[in-house]
Image (cartoon, rainbow, N blue to C red; front, side, top):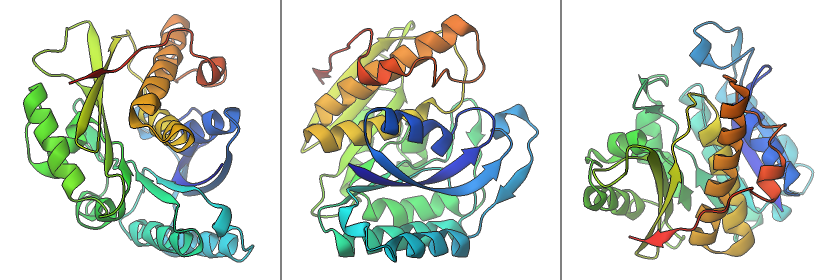
Length: 286
């Protein structure tokens, strides 16, 4: 499996490609990573150094890979944190080139905008680009609840309203694709206070995965979730199987992180969780 991953990079810690690449490699996938930013650490610390790359720089790397005549072997494009709205066009350029070379390739868009506790944390123009241009080209999307509400303008406080919002979001994705949506960090009026939900929708069917809430507040888990979900969706062809595998692995990762009392996800220490999760959770129709 070959995945072109276009996301941020940090030298210290694990977010963006620094969170997504290793789990994919640990599972046996080849990852062709292109970084949209290179920072010393994630911005949650309040201080960081580094730079945001331009759309032209990203496009140049895409074209350089294409010149190796290998895009026909690319199974998927994965995009995450962009850094700047100009990078969006370069990501879609990558998607177009990959699809030209391999029409069966899929595009998984992790529409990174923000979260409930932080609000919007991306630069102006990115949210609109994701809604109006990126998602209409996407086969798979992996937003959190906050991002679903921002992208659709619909409330997700009940299971019924969350399903309606996801249906609306999926309806705007690429026609002819699976229009598969994974919503993470889902809390509704039926979610127990000591648990957290993930929900996947594909082909009109909805499934819910509920896992115990863990005492952690970290960055980068969503990036790992998107990567793992994409991998397992490609491997199995099943959104439900991908939800179970990704959700179980990430729960194991976060459990190890909580045990370590770390502010950074324990991606290396918990690497066996990606291959064989300690605890396997099962999804139920909803």
